[in-house]
Length: 334
Image 1 (cartoon, rainbow, N blue to C red):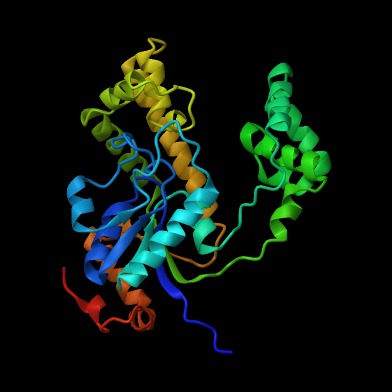
Image 2 (cartoon, rainbow, N blue to C red):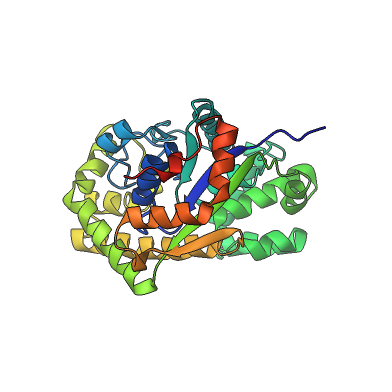
């Protein structure tokens, strides 16, 4: 039986402030595509400045998906993202548009590109709440639970940081409820491998990236990020909600509560963003199917887009065939 032709999917990943959105826009213009955001915070309404969402003009020019699909007090799971992104990709392909995934949330990208399944097995709110209470009651906190995890699921313990309470609790919850390690639970699910994917990562020298991060934070503050956080609080959103714990929001919540000064908050955002960028690179560097482009050597996003188009070569011809459109669209000039 002939295997059905898989939907082509182009993915642009990399650390925050590396220019993914601009390159994604340039590619969408050149390749007649639609953008599927892979950013875990851009899904939330009202969180625009701090998540660096595309402007209204950009969204009017190129159709974007997975932006503004949840309120800040909603629980937005990876499974939900996976489902919505799959729908968006299929709809874009049905319109004969090339789906272009753009973002730096590695788990979201992997959920779609590598087809991970996220079952509800092993979920028990009562067990989870008890484990969280045990962590709070212990002098050691999360590391105490991490030590327990190391005895029942050593592989998960090696993968999870000792202070990552949420993931530690989830792994222990699965083990207590199912009697099996979460590592084993994940292994039994076969990747769906639904797309014909090409992945490109944007990178640059560390000092250049750090400079971009600092400049971006300063631009966000100048654009009104503090007022955005204040407005969300005035709308009644809980400062402890998951969305409000995002970098650039939790720090200004602290500032607005009078617990630190503005400059302290700005410096904290820059520091946490730098740390996040490092974690992003660690995540993406694990995968050997990502083709890296040093954007520092390219003067404009359109130059990076042209470099990607050049590397894609025959893949684009195949993509046009699958999408049922006239070949050669990728030769369009911007």
